[in-house]
Length: 621
Image: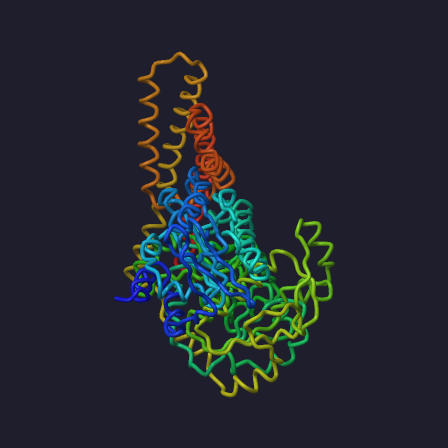
């Protein structure tokens, strides 16, 4: 078996998407004028790259392996959960030495700016020992570099951001300065997304708990987008309507699209559409606290099907009473458990942080081949955020602590955006490269340029892709519900069990608070009965095991996010110091039990009220 085949086989276990992209490059063997090797003084081979007519020796001319060993020594004391992100990969010598350090919780990511170097290495070196370690990922300029944003989001979050560092291998930064800038921006986008996600959970932790509980009673006659797959004709395009300032210029044309396209609106665009007499086929909402409902549009809401995240605002859903409800899941283990027993399950819908990102993923997921985007400004066009509001977007951004940036505009001009919009923009550009859709059209006619999409006026897009009429209401009517009668009874039983589950959590967390308070007293005293302290530790482990085995503990854990994340980050980033200080650890655990106790109280109150409401109203959509 050739080195290429060995490397492909190993890579396929960890990066199958990259392997698919590499298949078309198997025969692209770089010439010796672009990349070759020379023999170093110690007999090992050093890699040589030719860039703009100049040769660069990427390893030591004397002792390349020793050079790699010396470079890697800086990672000897790397902490668990760290992520090292390196610019450059070369012949793998550095990577092989670097990944000798750190256990399975340490991850390493490499970004190779030279596609010629990488393809040469795939044919000339056995890298299987590197690829077989599931904690190593490789990204190559011109092949899969855009995937880094989406992939790294699962490796870097709020807890290990302080442990994640950017590095570069010798010479790479100087040889590839422009690609290095691009690499930095790609990685920084991941950090921005992780920061935004952390802020969201901390700000809305109680909302997530409340919505997760109350939305349970919405599932009896719900379905999921999995049931939508292959339900819509291939020729039927989807129009994704967002609420950006440029939406106003497309309203009159959008009215002509009803029945010719599947009109999917983000929640914030609904009021603008309703005010113009446009009723979309589907609305999408994911926000745990957003309030977009207006009573005057009650009759319109009832004609719209809703795709809602399992933890999205239950208040809105209960008021708007959608025509059909389809549930998606971003991070709700209870919804996952509930729908897992049904025929279609519940899909995770990828998101870059905005409801429009989620709607894009939805359209791709259900098999639509053509998407036409309108109102997706991703910029503060004309100093506004939304088409139906005139507030000063610049002033608002500054007051809320957002940074402002200049980015390329839809028409090749320069427009101003803010850092959260920039993160959403970068997500779109990554998602376009991974999408299965054949035609991705941006008909916003304003705002920021989204690279990878085809700019086209909405009227031209409709003339090109929306030529036929469809009975879209009938198509949606025919989509099956998730639960049969027997499964609805099981769901009803589970819902009624939640108050007693909450009571059990309350009892255990109260005990946890009490025994850790006693442990703090003993540690402060200094001279104490070691057997009593061991008994406390043993009981703490028992409590932790009892609660962690319960599905609903994830809800409790998220609801206590502010304290839980502060404690966990402290323990991760100061592991050596924390382990040596029993008193500080015990104080942290005591604080955590207190937060869990308060979250369990909220769970008890909300589940009790929800069950009462269910008993009064019965199974309703």
